[in-house]
Length: 99
Image (cartoon, rainbow, N blue to C red; front, top):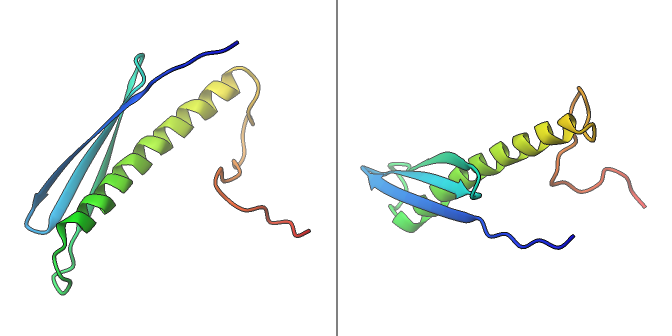
């Protein structure tokens, strides 16, 4: 089976008094996942707005990614393909074994 899909991601940013807030929305066509992220500039640091934008946006997208992974894990369990209980191995890591 061949399929092609396109999911839309929208990231909105706002900054006020050294705090940047981001909202990431993933629209799959059948559902929307909304993630949030915040970045605060340390008063002793130079205020570089783009850094706050990048941190807040990445945190919002990480929130969406966690929600998407949770949904996938649930669907895997529903069809009997995932672990019923217990810890789940980290999805983004190098193997602990050595060659």
